[in-house]
Amino acid sequence: MTDYGFARASDETLGIRNDLAQQVIRALGDAGLPAFREGEAGSADRAGAVIHVEPDAETMSAAVSVTWRCDSGKLQSAVEDLASGRADTPATRYPGVIGAHMQLPLVRILLAAGIIATPTHDCTDPNHVLVFGRVSDLPPALRPGAGPLRSRASG
Image 1: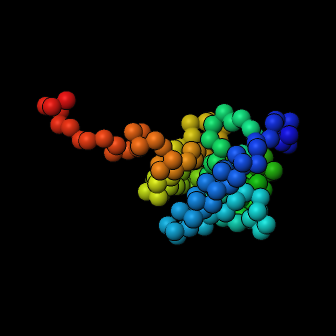
Image 2: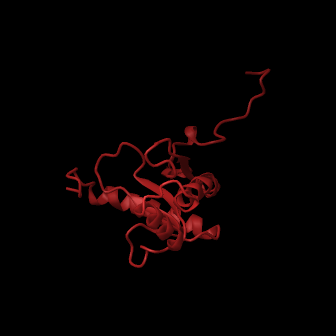
């Protein structure tokens, strides 16, 4: 069981998810971005791409996701403003604004590396990037550019 009482994914499934997470970290690192697993030692205050692997057996979305975390000083400023009742300040908006601006570049970098990724459309966590696998994992007929190109006239 996971922390929330759901069935835990099998070791084989978690191994596949963890391999995909490592590929995401490598792809983002190759592009020059800091990337690391959520919860890994020393990651609590790190800025960069945070990679999450879902431990649940069943997921409603992607089993691997990425979100952008800005500098811990900026996060602390947002928390301080919120704690003192100032909910709509530049400091409180900053982490979300930066996350939103980083979402599409993260998707594009992953797609360029052959990793299937898309922005989430979840209003409760709008900055996430969903990761579904590698293009090479798709059957040949479903891969981008599969099949002969035909002109519209011969269609």
